[in-house]
Image 1: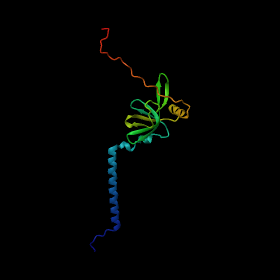
Image 2: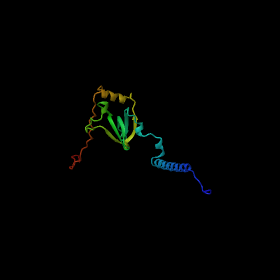
Image 3: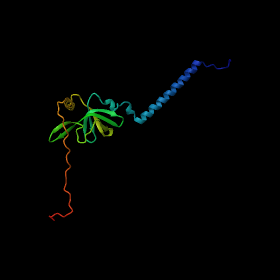
Length: 169
């Protein structure tokens, strides 16, 4: 027994625990590295749209087709937004500028309005004292009459060519 090497059990435990910690650390580094390459390093520091949308306020949603809608916006998954309590502005020569509650159009849309994320140019949280929010509050309290959207304009008509020659030729 004089020539044998004695390793204390405490030292073996310490080595085993250190190996487990090292393996766990390597796994964490691999997972984080994979996520960074997949999503990009900027996603670590940039807040998502859902974090920036203030649910206590109304939002203005500007779409790629030039339309702007006002309402309460929520993110729905990674590809969609849901807009409730939807309003928009209508400008016409006859009635001027009006706030329209969505739902009174001829097609009879129901809430919520589901918007593809690809169609959204940008979103703004609106101040509670903004003109639009003030109009929405007046509308909801009954101080503002219900406005209906102007009728769609008819497409210009053109004369159809006839098969018979015209008398002027």
